[in-house]
Length: 269
Image 1 (cartoon, rainbow, N blue to C red):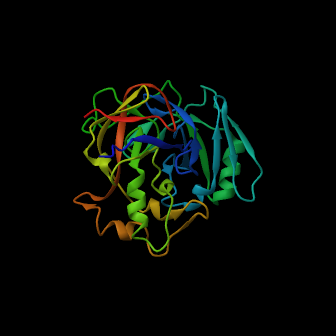
Image 2: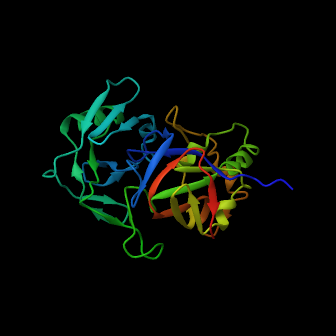
Image 3: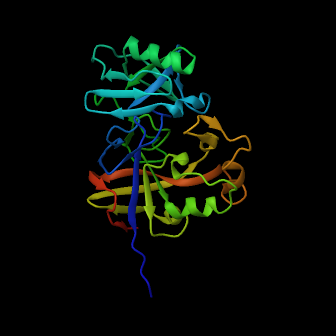
């Protein structure tokens, strides 16, 4: 009998919400999720968050974070260096049902982003002095998240993508679903039954499925949504639930540390 080895096959972060995926060889897992993941956000002139759901060209913005700021690149635009805002630049921003108090980015980056996207917008940054709680109905009191939709980390089995691609005329990369962690060596959607896993020194609680909107229809290499609504159109046929199409699992860190591509994954519960 062959025993399958379960491993962490890929790590991705999205330093600015809705930007292009950034692959990593290793990442530090913090209470809000992976280090640098979705700590930056774009807001409109009304201080309401904006995403690629409405402005798909956001997926073309390539972002490389550091401890002091960001580097932004996009087609036809000069490279832009952005520093973490000063603590005196605190503003109010609305993310779904939450009102948070991030730091406002500078005017130069706002002009750069506004020009590329064709709308008035500004970067904001979530520093460690402010916390955004996870919905207590979906987590424990004290759990926090960055600017991710609901939970700090998203986990997906690589075989789930393989299964989906076997049903599509044009295969798509796993990053369309923006998983932070891609797990190899398990059956498709094995993560649906997991309650807790260990990756290296890190432990995560898996708290339920990620319900999918139309975001995965956007090709992040072109910034153009699929005209046929794929892959959501296909997923409706076999991954539909009472809440909607489900694909991947939301997770929260319970033991922090560093994870690396190739780390063994152990299902604890």
